[in-house]
Amino acid sequence: LTNTENKISYSRQLYNSVTSNYNVKLEIFPSNIIAGMFSFKPADFLAVPEEEKSVPKVDFSGLGD
Image (tube, rainbow, N blue to C red):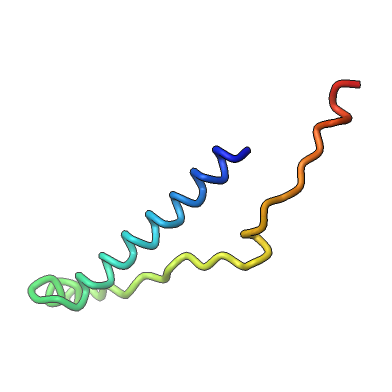
C-alpha cells in the first residue's frame, strides 16, 4: 500500500512539473508564436483536496478467518 501511495505521489509531482514546463513554453519566444497560432491554452495544475492526501486506515485482521 505504501508503494502504491509513493507511485501516486510521484505521478502527481511529475504531472505538475510537465504542466509547469508546458505553461512556460507558451510564454517564451518562439514557441509562444506557434502556441498563439494554434490557440494553445495554459494547462491547469493537479490540485488534490486535503482529505485525499491523508493515509487511509486499513485493517486486514479479519481476512484470515
